[in-house]
Every structure is written in C-alpha cells, then in structure tokens.
Image 1 (cartoon, rainbow, N blue to C red):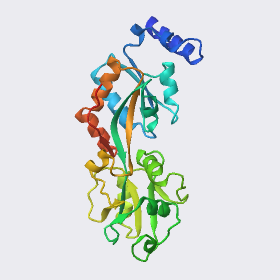
Image 2 (cartoon, rainbow, N blue to C red):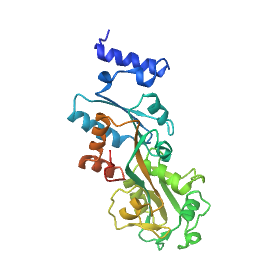
Image 3 (cartoon, one colour):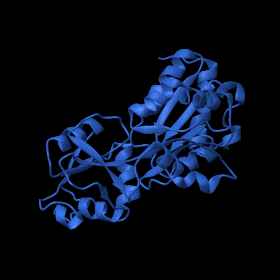
Image 4 (cartoon, rainbow, N blue to C red):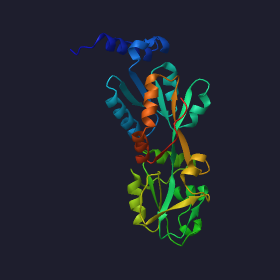
Length: 279
C-alpha cells in the first residue's frame, strides 16, 4: 500500500471533497498546504508550450509542484471559481467578460499567415475570398484574381493553435472543406506549398525561409509584428492568462513565460510573445 504524507493526504481528501461540492473553494485546502502547488488549466488544443515552461520552472524550483489539465474551451472559468485551478491559460476572449472577477493578462498573440507558391501571381487576398477557397466555394485561381488553374488547399489539423485561429478569424461559420489535406506543423505546410504551384495554405508565425513560397497580404495588410500586435492585421487574436488572484506561484509562472527561454518556446510554436503584463 502506497504511503502518503499527512500534507499530501490532506490535499487529496480536500480536492476530492471540493470536486463533490462538499467543501467551498476557499475552505478546501489551507494556504500552508497549497502554497507550493500550481494547478494550471489549459484551453489550448496544444499544451506543448505550457508544458515546456512548467518543466523548466519546476526544475529550477523543486519545491514547486505543477500540474497541467486540458480543459474544454469555455469551461475553465468555472474551475477557477471553484478553486480547483490557480491559473487558466485561454485562447478565447472570455477573459474580457470577467475582468471584475478575474485578473486577465494577455501574454501572446496567435496569428496566421496565408502562403502560396512563389510562382503564384497573386499578392493579396481578402478574408472573404480565403474563406470561400477553403470551403471550396471557389475552386479556380481566376475566381480570386489569379491565373487559370485549379486551387489545391492545405491546412493544419485541429491540434494546432493556428488552425483554431484560422477557423475563428477567417472561416467563422463557414465549414472548411472536409477533404482538405491537413498536416501537423508549419514546416509540413511550407513543404507542400513549395512543391505545388497551385497550392494555398496557412501557418502560424514560425520563421520558415524558402524561396519557393511567399506570404500574401490579407486585406492589403502585411502580417508584420507591428500590424499583428496593434490589431491591424485581422487574422490574429490574443492569448490570456487568467487568475482569481495573483499568488507567488502564478507570478513565478508568468515570469518564466516572459523569460528568454519562455519567449523562445512561444516562437517555436508559431506564437508571438507580448511584453510582460503588469502583475
């Protein structure tokens, strides 16, 4: 039989009672027992960045126990209210609705760029035309202002943040063509487009250098860092850290996320780090 310390046993029982509704969130575990625990909920489709930052933070602070739970989109605030989570990582605008109850900190931007073959004569595309292409309402480039050739479409699978941003900001209520070839990374998309002069795809902001692909302006706006952060570029949205109140543990995590290694992890996932929010 596995043995637990009194501290661990108390925490397990308290969390069980909390989930059953027997205890109130504020009564579930006293501060002495949870002060070294950080319960993070993540509404992202891909938790790689959060796991990377958490692992490095835990390695530097052995006394800090971090757990990450994948939460269904839109349900995280309920777990914050009940005290089951200390922190929610969200890719929705929901945080703005709860600013009086929660503390909301934007920490990165998810943006998507539209890419085609460098042989394509098109230089700009509208959000509306892009949605029509990916729903197969448009099937020839000449319907979008380009050359006379069938359009081949490529996308990212739903486990990527870029796919969710594309569907939210470009497709909106329009369905993506169900037979689209979907891959799991920006590099794979770039490789497919580079070998298909009639192809079109989208990717996060991963820096991929290739003379065989080019990025289109969207609604005559370049996906530059300045345009993305200012909100001028339309296919972009902010990502948030949401807490009920800041603790020493949540501050440590935010500091780690804003560190050079944290920013590097964000960039490697195609995200754009924002300047540290005032805590």
